[in-house]
Length: 316
Ligand SMILES: O=c1ccn([C@@H]2O[C@H](COP(=O)(O)OP(=O)(O)O[C@H]3O[C@H](CO)[C@H](O)[C@H](O)[C@H]3O)[C@@H](O)[C@H]2O)c(=O)[nH]1
Image (cartoon, rainbow, N blue to C red):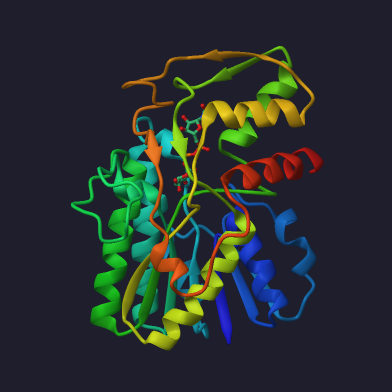
């Protein structure tokens, strides 16, 4: 079985590559290294089962080349920054929707049988039902990023039905862990390294979200993909997250404690009632009943995942 991982040199992608290589697959990575790094996959570069293509998926020819002889595609390449929604909507469109379209155009003329896509909890926007199940609707993303992920999901469903391949979509909570190079924990650590006395917290600090460790995420994706294959459906969607949530202020406390610091917290107040930025979802908790019904469950809750991530990032 040959597997293509788009974004395989990135944060979540490289952990997925580790797991696939350890399971004996032949793995090809397509990554433009804009956010990812060769360091994340360096242990596999000389392995005969591994292949790396450096390329930008906005170029359809590179994508066509990458899907050649591939049976399974894990599509993780994306710009993951919700916060650039106001400044760079066209970039979010290109790096989430256009590249997915290019991939689907390449898949329709290929031998690919399965596509696995990492979508996001942000497709739900400010959900009125919490925890939010997969069939919640109407979906009203509140960021361009969330809208782009939803558009990508919709294209995948349409192509899977028309061109007869199978696709499973994972709507991910906030994923954290070693190799993360963006997000709240990474930001707090860097801010405190620069100034151990004061920590600026965007928004009012009450933003509540569910955080899932990348090891639980990869295990969940691989486990549910096997279940999905056995079920034989054309298309399905799964939430992947934790059953608890943690506030930004609590994350700040854990980061400070792990760094042995006692900084003054300065809240910026944020926008629209304490959001870190326009489009920041204030309360996110996914209903993971469906994922759990396949036999998967997270090993770490949000608090444990945050603490472990702080330690992993400080060690790196
Ligand atoms: O310096 C900072 C950075 C972040 N925050 C706050 O921390 C929370 C988490 O922010 P992150 O940047 O870590 O993550 P997001 O919730 O914006 O988005 C993350 O999770 C989403 C899914 O929930 C998406 O998939 C996305 O790609 C991924 O980056 C936000 O409420 C934000 O306001 C701060 O207070 N200060």
